[in-house]
Amino acid sequence: MARRTGNIDEFEFIAIGDYHNQGRLAVEILISGFVFSKEDYVRPWEGQIDNMERYRILIPLPIVCIALELMRQGAMMTVLSSLVAALALPAVLLSATNFIDSKWSIAVDRSDKAGRLLAEVLLKGYQGNRPVTLIGYSLGARVIFSCLQALSETERNAELVERVVLLGAPIAIKDENWEAARKMVAGRFINAYSTKDWMLGVAFRASLLTNGLAGLQPVDVQGIENVDVTDTIEGHSSYLWSTRKILERLELEVCYPVFKSKEKEE
Image 1 (tube, rainbow, N blue to C red):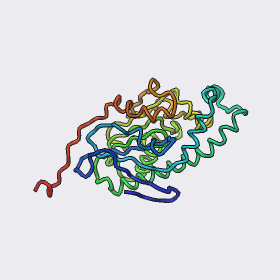
Image 2: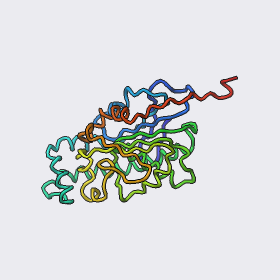
Image 3: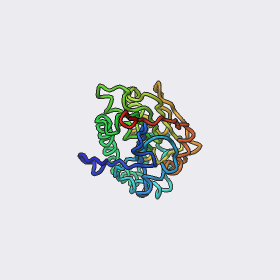
Image 4: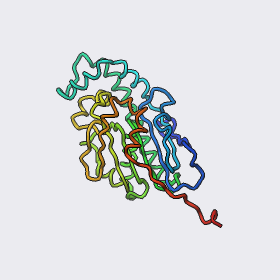
C-alpha cells in the first residue's frame, strides 16, 4: 500500500520475504534512514529469517548528499572529539558542517512527519490489527519514535506495537518524552547505540549533544533495554551492513502462529 501526505512526497510499504497473504499473526515494519543509493533501503534487511509478514518503508529523505559529505570530510573524527570536549564547533569547521545542518534539518523534519503518518496508518488498522514490530536505524529510528509519540497522544495504550528496536537513533535523550513512548510498546523496547558513531555526533552538532543522543549512549528510562554495539558499529554507515548481525544478537526470532480465520477453517 502507498500513502502520500503533506511534504512527504511518497510513503510506501514494500513487501519483503515470502510470508505475505498467508494469515501470519505478526507484522514487522523496517525503516532505513541513512543511505547512499536506493539499494540501501533494502540491504540492511536482506537475509533475515523469521516467521513474520515483513515490510520496509520507502521515505525519500535528503540523506545521500549528507552521507557523501560526511564521508568526504576525513577529519570528522576529530570534530566529534572537539564537540564533546568543548561543546562548541571550531570556527574552521563551520563551512563543512553548515551544509550538513541544512540538509539534516530537512531530513529530521520529514522523519518526524513520516512518523506521525505511520501512527495514522497503524491506528486505521491497515496492518490488520495484528501485533507490530518496528525496527529502524538512523533517521528510520526517529520515524519510529515520532510514531510512538503520536500514538501516545491518543487513548491507545500498547495495543498496536509489540516490539521496537532503535539503531543509531538521532533522538535527544533529555528533551524527548521517552516514558510516553515506552508506554506505547507492549514488549521489548531496545535502544542500540555506539560510542564510536562520530557521524551522528557531527550531524547533530554541539547544541544537541548537550542533551545526549540515544544513538551514542544509553537511555536511562525504566523499561528501555540498552544494547552497546560499539564493537560492531564504527560509524553511522556501518548500520548498512551490520544491522542483520545486530538483530541476530538481540535474539528477536520468535515463532508466531499462523492466524486462520473461521472462513478458512470451514
